[in-house]
Image 1: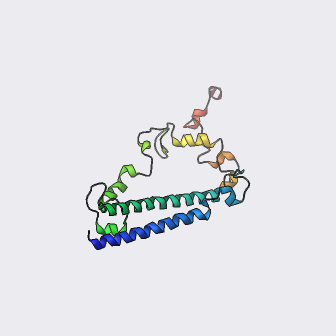
Image 2: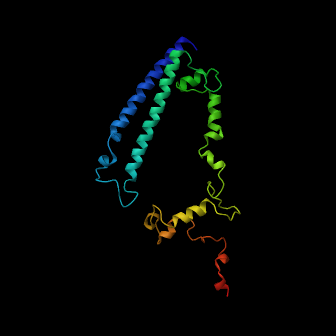
Length: 206
């Protein structure tokens, strides 16, 4: 890595540091320092319907997520500047090989070479689903088995058992429905049976 390249990277990192700090300050000044009650002008955040404050809650959560992302990037930039001063900048934290200069130009605060980054992104550890699901068996795991020849209690059955006591939706939210029982999928399925004949009791047969 040439001295000129190091200087260019250093300037870029300082520019990114200033950019992230300004963005964090901007997000915080545009409402995050105020309570949700003050932002909405409501006397209470308790309402009769779960959708009333849905938009405000979503926007607040989005702003918090954006701020936290900028904080993470700011920390990466700070760490990169620290490594630059110590002379350890530009080496992969995984394989300890030199990171390609093209990659450093694209992402100055990266800590992994392209090969190691691709391995991390493609690994099962980085899966979007929780790793615990690989060892949790039905009915507690994620186990919707639509279309499969499976008659045991699975995730779909668990959802139906809970949803028949009510959920956030009402018939008018779904449109064209008359009963609260109809607001969840396959609400007309038999509870605790697979075939209709299994509903018959001894009294029905006699």
